[in-house]
Amino acid sequence: MTLAIARALAERINTEPGMRAVLTRDRDEFLELRDRIRRARLAHADMFISVHADSIADRSVTGASVYVLSVHGASNEAARWLAERENAADLVGGVRLDDKGALAPVLFDATQSEIIGVSATAAERVVAALEGVGEVRKAQVQHAGFVVLKSPDIPSMLIETAYISNPEEERRLRSASQQAHLADAIASGVHSYFMNNPPDGTRFKQQRRSTLASAADTPSAPVTP
Image (cartoon, rainbow, N blue to C red; front, side, top):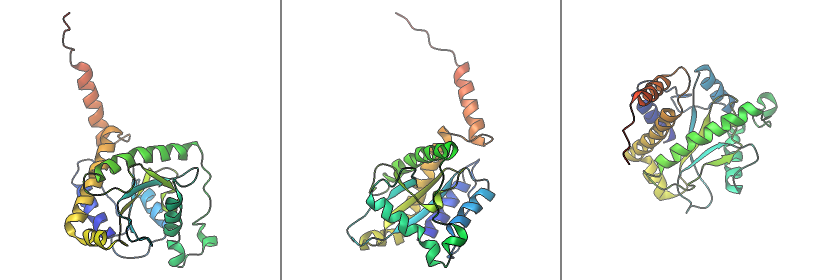
C-alpha cells in the first residue's frame, strides 16, 4: 500500500516542471534506515519523504499524521512509541546496532536544527493538503526521533498515511482511489512549499525571481484622497 502511494507520488512529482522524484526503493524489499538516507544524499535530494502506514493496539485510532525529527524529545508518548517501533526496522532486518549505529544519538548542531525547521515548514504544507482528502489525526506537525529523518542536510518528513489496524481505514487505504488522493495531496503540499521556498539553482528559484522582478517593475496605482 505505501509503496503504491510512493510510486503514485513519484509520478505526480515527475509531471511537474523542475521536479524529479527518486525512489529509495521501487519494490518490496528491506532497506536499512541509514541506507535510505544515503540514497537520498547521492541523489542530491532537496527533500526526503518517508511514506508509512502504521498499526496500533487500539483499533479505533484513525487518521494521518506528519512527523519531522525531534531535537528535544517526542511530541507525545504516542509519537515516541511510534518512532521506537519504526526505528526497530533494522533489528527486524538483521542489522546489528553496534555495526551501523542505527539508534545512536544525534549531535544536533546549528545546521541540523535549521534543517529541522525547514522540514517543519514543508510538513505544515503537507498536513494542510492532507486535510482535504481525509481525516488527519494530528492537525499540527509532530516531532519524534525517527532514524530515517536524521539526515544532517536534507529537509525530511515521515508521513503516516493511515492506521491499518483500523479495518475501515485499511480498506480505504487499499483502494487505488484513496492512494491516488493521498499522492495528490502530498504532491500538492510539496509543490506549495517549493513555490514559496525554492532551493537555490532550481527552476522554482528562477520563477520566483522573475515573479518578484515583475512585481517590482509594476507601477503602483495612484492613490486619490
